[in-house]
Image (cartoon, rainbow, N blue to C red; front, side, top):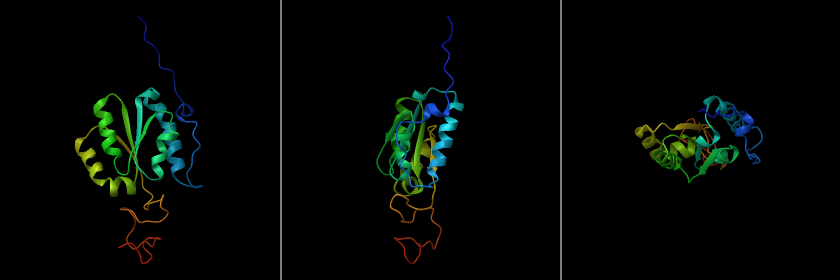
Length: 155
């Protein structure tokens, strides 16, 4: 009996038909392009990837990948991804989060996902600010940063 060959995938195979809606010049475009470019190098079928996101600019990521995806609630992407991995350990599960979503509101879920050592891949978009709200400081903002929410500087 002969083995079925998996066709060689390309970056284009991982691009969805959704219009990308990030601000012009945003670094998220580069993260998306490089992720789509690297996916074929893993030697897996598209159906074996799952991208799970929370809230924020990075949360749109699953819509832009031609794979399985789940847009969860704020800070809970690591918990949802853990459930996906437990349900099907053979999947390549990716958490897509930002510094605010993953380290502030979801910090507890992030730490527990790390503690469980579940073989999750984590893409953290660290722009050192809550980009979606256009100016709140995040856990990675530099001390003294002036934002719309902190006109006298981040404590």
